[in-house]
Amino acid sequence: MKQGKYSQKFENTVSIVSAASVAGKKEGDGPLGKLFDRVEEDPQFGQDNWEAAESQMQKMAADIALEKAGISRGQIRYLLGGDLLGQNIATSFGLMELDLPVFGLYGACSTMGESLNLGSMLMDGRMADYLLCVTSSHFATAEKQFRFPLEYGNQRPLSATWTVTGAAAVLLGNQGGIARIAGVTPGKIVDFGVRDSMNMGAAMAPADDIIGP
Amino acid sequence: MKATKEEEKAYGDYIKKVTPIHNTAFNVLRAFVSGGLICLVGEFLNELLAGQGLSQEVAGAWTQIILIGTSVLLTGLNLFPEIAKFAGAGVLVPITGFANSVVAPAIEYKKEGQVFGIGVKIFTISGPVILYGVVVSWLLGVIYYILHLTGILSGGMG
Image 1 (cartoon, rainbow over the protein chains, first blue to last red):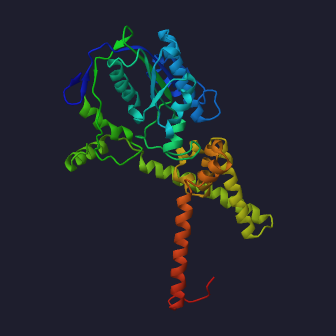
Image 2 (cartoon, rainbow over the protein chains, first blue to last red):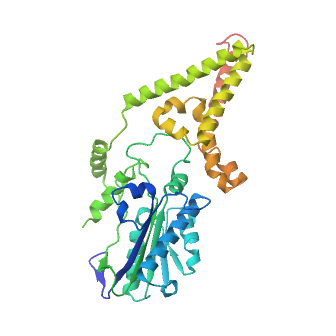
Image 3 (cartoon, rainbow over the protein chains, first blue to last red):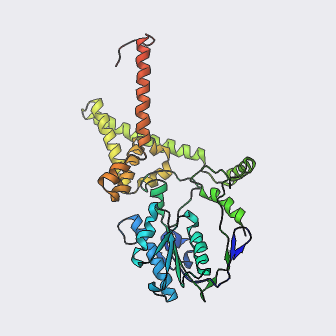
């Protein structure tokens, strides 16, 4: 049900049935390390190239989420997924094996939030029994696509962003689960004129401030 | 939403205040020492080779080949980024940096094929240096030529 200017308050139960996360070694060593379902030491995730590695992460996250919920692939109606790469390549190859309809999303850092926003609205509308929201990023694929080749020697500014190597999958359902989504408020584009493309923290911080609690 | 000029200015001032930056003086010092060291090695090689009876020109060429080769090898072994992190411009400005900037994309894009990977992407970093290097030398050549024609500069044309 519409609420306020841009929000939705759900009439039906939208629940997070299960959630899964896969991360790289650096992330595993960080303060959130213990919270990840799987921390992989091999940055290539046993694959031949970085893009395939990112796809593999998505696949792993999706599999773990399904396993945790005890749900089979066939019970899911739609996938809502995205990543940072051109043509959403990590998503399209990563989720291909699941053999399910995919809505490809591209919200950069907000892809997880975007997929949950849209997914929960679909769930509230009772368009599905189960939906899987998936996203990923990989340090090496992001460096390659947006910055420099890894072997290139440069001095990273102290404020430069370090793209996470990780993937997450959230299974939405309409009962039980570990949490409930009562409503959503999507964000707007906020531009405070930060021109340093390496300092994404500074560029994105005002958005958090304005959308706020 | 686009912030107003005042908001942008206030936020710009704020992030300038809180964003940590590298110590410039320290960076310059490290670049000076490591860049100097590379030049010293180059000079040493040059003298050594010239002392072996090679002409100055040939010795210079060999020195360049050795420096480039070393940089390429260090890039391949993934040691160059660590060195550059410490030395900064000291290792990037000499010929070693240029070599790295050509080899790094070649390694990274090898997976995308010989033509569309390496071929298309190899000069993505060094391309601007090559383009504007050629344009500027062409421009200087034209100026040099005109100065000669007008008699402002005398002497032979190279």
